[in-house]
Image 1 (cartoon, one colour):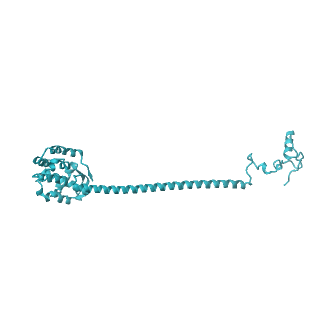
Image 2 (tube, helix red, strand yellow):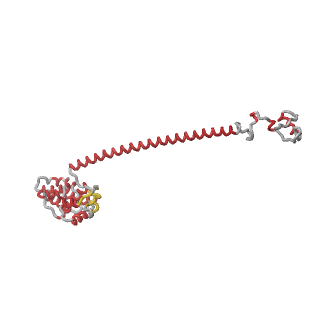
Image 3 (tube, rainbow, N blue to C red):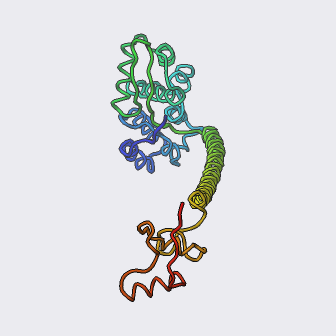
Length: 294
């Protein structure tokens, strides 16, 4: 995974950009040599865009311009294949070009075997290779883990390098493809969320309808159970007083007023005049009546 260069790295290129505004010819070529050897400078695109630097094309100092392009875009193995195209490199430049090559490999691979690194960087020992990787980690241009048991370098991140015109077009194409893939994924997620919301709403409606039907059934059962209960007890509802059958249903008042008197005694009202009068009103007659016998 690539990260942007730190502010400090860009700041280290700034002095060379200022000098490039006035440097020409041999001075511009010398400036390129210094910039490619300077510690902490790992990007060169802005320097390449300077007018005095680009004017070295087709002059006696064209090799210096080719060298700057190599450090901006190229790798150490490219240098080895075309040594005659570039000026000779000092040890600081060789180390930096190897570090830049390591960065390029880290941008394209998650795990890099030691064998590939040894062949590409033309190093003779694993100890030398691991020292170079550790230097890159301290310079904060890459990060990862040295797996000595498996003989590989596991990349966590690396800085980005300058891009050629074709590299910019390839990056743009990758970004466009990523944008399409992201849009498709978002559309699919939206569709899934809408489906989930619809299913939840339908489930909620079903629960509410089920609850309403349950309450209606319970109400109906309660009403039917209440009617059967009174029917089992004689088919009449309670009177206004709450005791016994209602007078409005034609109950026999004589039954209500039945008095258990001694055998042979006549049924007649006893007590004072008020009691006799009440008895007469209820019975409809002031004559004594015989007691029902069973």
